[in-house]
Image 1 (tube, protein in one colour):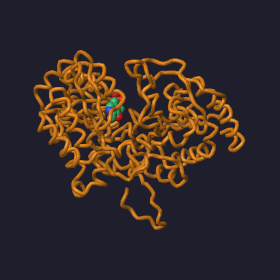
Image 2 (cartoon, protein in one colour; image 1 turned 120 degrees about the horizontal axis):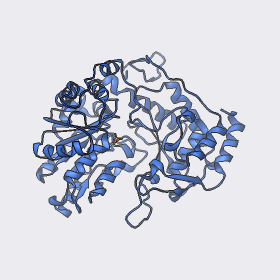
Image 3 (cartoon, helix red, strand yellow; image 1 turned 180 degrees about the vertical axis):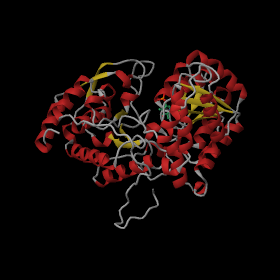
Image 4 (cartoon, protein in one colour; image 1 turned 135 degrees about the vertical axis):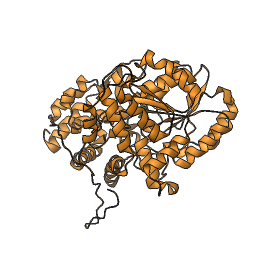
Amino acid sequence: MGNINFYSGESIPLEMHKPKIVQKLKLVPVQRRLEAIREAGFNTFLLKNSDVFIDMLTDSGVNAMSDKQQAAMMVADDSYAGSHTFTKLDDTCAEIFGTSYFLPTHQGRACENIISQVLVRPGTIVPTNYHFTTTLAHITLNGGKVVEPHIDEALNTSSKHPFKGNMDLDKLQALIDEHGADKIAFVRMEAGTNLIGGQPFSLENLADVKKICDRNSLLLVLDASLLADNLYFMKEREEQCKDLSIREITRKISDLSDIIYFSARKLGCARGGGICTSNEEVYLKMRELIPLYEGFLTYGGMSVREMEAIAVGLEETMDMDMINQGPQFIAYMVDELEKRGVPVVTPAGGLGCHINAMAFVDHIPQEEYPAGALAAAFFIASGARGMERGTISEQRDEHGNETLADLELLRLAVPRRVYTLSHLKYAIDRITWLYENRKLIGGLKFVEEPSTLRFFFGRLDALSDWPEQLAKKFEEDLGNL
Ligand SMILES: *Cc1c(COP(=O)(O)O)cnc(C)c1O
């Protein structure tokens, strides 16, 4: 895939795998979609799957497994301690990342809990290329503060910059000088930077960040949850990576990182997580917390079947044919939407296609949650669900004031190896219709607002009868489906 020439001159993303098991999908009529989004408090997290046609909420835990992963699950060694399955996963992590120690956790945020408890003290600062929702919550919970010395280009939604996930080195150094290195808990780099549109950092940037960390005796922590996408973009876009294998690039990244953690709901296409490090001192401190929060050291809250699948999935991630499917499908979607004038985040990143809600519904003020409103409207128009990544995904500050997000995005995740090109074409068609009727979309307000991670289960309401008006127009234009 990728370097195949087509006689037609078209550029068609071509899957290097085929489905062996399929799941039937159902598309419910637009009036039911309207009812369903009302029942869900205009929060796509609260929709029932029986109402969802194409699930573009997330890539977490919903990537398709390979036949080899399924086969490995059948031979899992189910024992509380000393499991052979653990040894396999432990060996795989050591082999791929070159690290000495592996700690299993039930998912990515559990790693963040453990790392934050060990390294974050009240009043300390964590500089990061960009925060992730659960990362921010855990660092804040431990009294730390997240600061983001990202490059200015990171927040430019229409850019050609190949590595918008890069850290701004001058800003990072200035931050360390301002607060003193002893006030910095650690420096965090997130691969495939999630909240700014799945944007990668470059190997060169990581190496420069590492130099700054070394000069100031700081630990460099890598969130490798979206590493697969970052690897693809390094190989595609960075000169020094062109002739390296994915395995070699991975090793270069891990050699620059003191602690690597990942959500195996993304990396490895299964469900779980883990922390890898060669730093014995930090490892021993983190290890104490695993039995307390996760489970015994040889499973850490994961099922052994999932651990088998992760070991195979990590190996499979070292293959360009596997990791290019997501980014190439996403690039197709982004290109097609751009051709139709729809404001999308460019360049296309990993994880999903990100629609710039601030521009799409520029008549909705940020206080009325444009990205949340667009997510609800897109569900009504398509039965496909995306995720709000904007102000609703932020939390209020210590005084209870709204924290307006830098970006208001509707994220349409493209889970790896799950949907076909025709599913994407359908989504593109519905977004195009929605764009032409965007003035019908109105704002939202909270009616039930949890204080942490409110986007998961908060409930909202429409500020007018815009959802009904939108559904009515849809029926006039396209019928009831
Ligand atoms: C998903 C994700 C996490 C959290 O992982 P979970 O398995 O969902 O807990 C952390 N960091 C990044 C970058 C992620 O994408």
